[in-house]
Amino acid sequence: MKILIANSYSLDIIYKEWSEGKSPSHFLFGKIELEKHHKIKVDIVPFEKWKFINKLGKIFKFGNLDQELWMLFRVHNYDLIYATFGTGNTKLLSFFKLLGFIKTPIVMLGHQNLYIPEDDRFGIKKKILLSYERILFFSKELMVKTIKDLDLTDFAATKRFDVVNWAPDREYYGEDFREKLASESKFAICAGTTDRDFDLIIDVFKEIGFPLEIYCTPGTRPRKDNLPSFITINSDFIPYSELVARYKKARFILIPIKDEKVKTGRTLGLTVLLDSIAIGKPVIMTKNKYVDLLDPQKKEFGLSISNNTKDEWVSTIKEVLNDFYKLDEMGRKGHELFLNGYNSVSYSNELMRHFTTLITDRNKI
Image 1: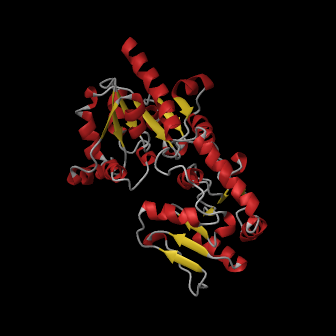
Image 2: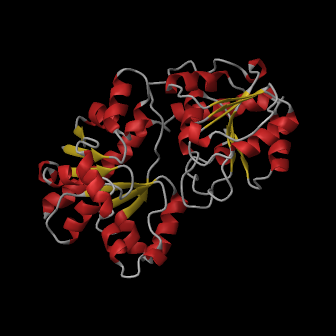
Image 3: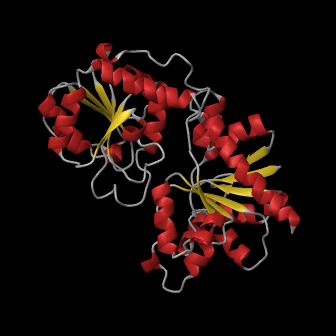
């Protein structure tokens, strides 16, 4: 079996970082485990090989036209196309599938809103979306929303849609997760680049008076003046391995999401949740109904803030801040979940089940 994996940012760079031990394999969405445990070949589509073609493509609303053309001329050399970032770089392929020129199955991951009925007056986007043989969602709630938006019957949805548990690299983090007990940790940590409410969490920790470390980008740096000395903000680049090292030393991890963004049909916060269970650190996060397969409250490795206000954040954090036993128990349960199957090996097994079914069905035709 030979698979082509396509993404809207460079997987080549991430693969190089993984091969150098600088980042975990789950950022490659199963490539490493599919090759190691299932003995199949997974090739990465080169990213922005021809930038001038991409510039031309944007005129016609093809954001990654160079990748699309690269795949278009090679698609028949592969058993399956695996699109890890929505329709971003497979629009052209799906159009040719609609015309019947491409028979190779395409599997797409769904971790953000894929369809808005009001933006599809003529139903073309719906037809394109349904040309994918399988859409695998990181959220059951997001899958249900998409089925409703597409106005599909349960039978039609069952044939094409399913959920998968994207999960952390089983080997990268090692077995010795408990570097610091909660009683030994002297700060909380908040990191992220997508729609984090850093302003809210700063106000929360100003009131609590407990040390807080924030890691962000220059573009997402909070515009707060006169910060107390126990709150630090780092907007410089920090290697993933160094960030994980700080996670391990923290008392808990914070994932505050902006109110207006938490309802947009995206699995915001999921990446950090994978970090947390892999290293056994409890989390406190804004409730996101689209992060339901790994809900920290239900899985008992963290707490969810339903009413995303300063008062509720302050109350929740104060309740557990010095409850070291509860914090350590939440961390232990998260890590136990990781060790007992919620990891990259099980994720690759889920992928392989779908890939095998699709390729077998195609060969019957």
